[in-house]
Length: 440
Image (cartoon, rainbow, N blue to C red; front, side, top):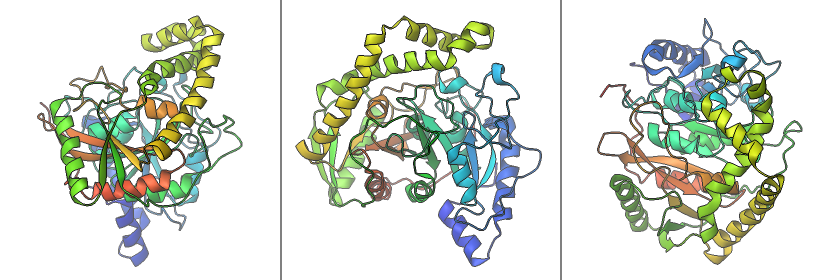
């Protein structure tokens, strides 16, 4: 693959100046997507010819890969499941409609794990085809990493935006719970599901967020996060570093990358504070599994009963676990989720007076092979709490694969977090690059 798509900012500048037409960028992305399929397998569906949105709007010329659990009226949405082969939605998901209205072109449907859970698809890591790109938003992360598209949509129920972004060396952004409406997005666990973005730069993600954020009447799930959305940019750079990571032990290279970044941020004026997380945060992955099991059983239980042979073993097991949980356990976890979100908000904003936490997005480099998409424990707490998180590339590990650094902010402080993340991104030493597939 030789084509490397420009960033969204570069596309906008070229279109505005008349240097290039929107069609040129989209066709180049389409050709790159077609050419890469045999190696990368990033797309579940590509049309026969390049689709071009000719609306003269903010995202004209921007080609987008859309995770195949997000409805598109002109393309199949099959959830990586044989049970839904050939499914054609009647209308676009809300976030897709907003992208089209802003001038973006939906290039194709990117590979997801089955129902955005654990059964992986064929996508490989663009940096080395012997390794996973992460999941469940596998194709979205890989398509941006390989330079095919400048923007992709994903979802996160545990770590499915942040982790694959880190593994593939791109920016991944999971906003505050409910910030991007989930109308037309297949739920895995509606109490945890977030729509997120993959991009080459933090500035691109921030620009797109302004265009797609907002509630929708078809997304009825009430938010459990405190406060209201704010639009203020970052006013401080007081960043917390954890004495103990919420997900467990880190590989030495990942710890070294975080330490080196913190030292650089401190040198450039940030206040780095070592902090201990509230003890209850370490239980959030267990609580998240309670919500996921019950809610997945409600969404997918009928299919499992009707056609178990069409559903993977991990999903069948999740449905069985959810059905076995007492209703009181689920109800108590829902109450606990809201209370913990409020307590964490007070701890971050008031007790510790932090602008963000700097944490690991994963234990280190991606696992070898495609059967396991990685441990979500380093992302699950922030998803359970519904707070915004963004990961930026921060270097490479001993296998030559990307490492990331995750920033976690206060609920509804998405703009401020992205503003801080852009400042951090400029100090990672990472040069915006594109992976070239190699086998090892």
